Length: 362
Image (cartoon, rainbow, N blue to C red; front, side, top):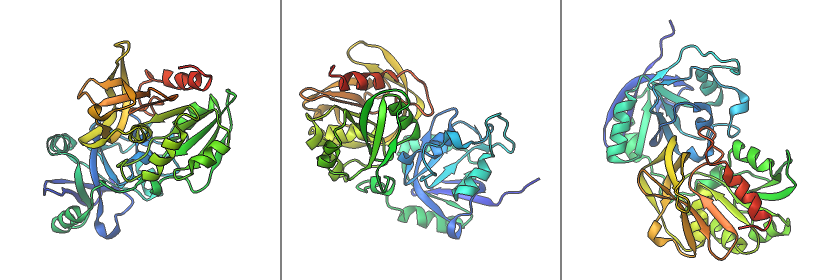
């Protein structure tokens, strides 16, 4: 039987967890990042390849990970940009007709390190009680890992968008609709592009593309994508959105929601441990209907700071603002992921709302 090297996970406050190293070897036996937990029951491949996890170590609360393998069709980006993965029990064998390889082979192939055998229930409780914090894992000794965790800078105030956005514009051909959509890539997911492609041709542009260049493309609508980290330091995106408002219909998801809110004069703040998972209940304020949603964010919009917009959705767990609609421009956004890769499909109607907005509706 294959024996894995012993490894440790050490948080910045000194909390220590024992496990075994998996995936690619860590540089000098140490990998660092901000430790967060995800409550999804499946979809580990989509989660690991979601660019919104840049700078973070992902711990899965579901204990059994890797049992159905991985395949190239379920990637949400070219490769993972997260800092590592924490698992309770990594399946030694995978079984699924779509599988092309096992999860551990995938991790090794893309150079991503991980640790298995961790008591993720205790880890989740600790992060829930004390908040997301830097951590370090690997085969190094406990003292080195603790020092590395303490020295690791948090994601606050860091522009992580510039590390994941595309270098050059590219086009996604329409699979049905006739619209012309420009999508800002703040860390956009493949599943989102798939849904936008059903509405029309999608021109994906780097995050720093000036608003004037976007308007020169004569789009029917502009999409503001998901992305990692703190929205505050991404000032160039906020300024561009402010210049677009009123000139073209705008739809934002996740970080795009936060950036639209900032452009309207609202404020954002960091949640204690963020929302990461596929089971968050959100209520539409206009109808009272409840959607079960997929979420992945550490920052949120302060409800009492929302101006020039109405709040359209609220999180039923903690009251966080989950959606807004601009009062004097054709623009709306949601904090969660209606494309749900992975997650429930309750919120896919929002892409239809974007189509109606581009058609001149409200």
